[in-house]
Length: 147
Image (cartoon, rainbow, N blue to C red):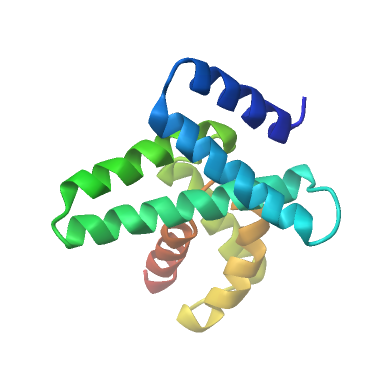
């Protein structure tokens, strides 16, 4: 079963259960996938993952903006939508796992200071794609290079 089929099945279940947040979030996800399909051909599993990552990132950023804007009810809504999206993402790396991968990437690239961050991120990005928040990875690399 493809990920798109799984989302469609989960949508049917959530509609029957009258789970409004889940239903709306899954509809939004399917709409984003359909927009991707309109660009040409069938969406691959990797492209599907990219769409889910993008939507999850939008939810995280909106949640942070609502928290800063002192709108906890809207931040809570964004968090609920994010919780619906998380099962469609690969399991997330822990901070320790990210740090270990970053150390290996720094050693492999021979990076010594902040100027070499691009090299390290280029090496590290494919390894953590979909498994870790890019901002957290960048922060970890910056801290390691500064030390």
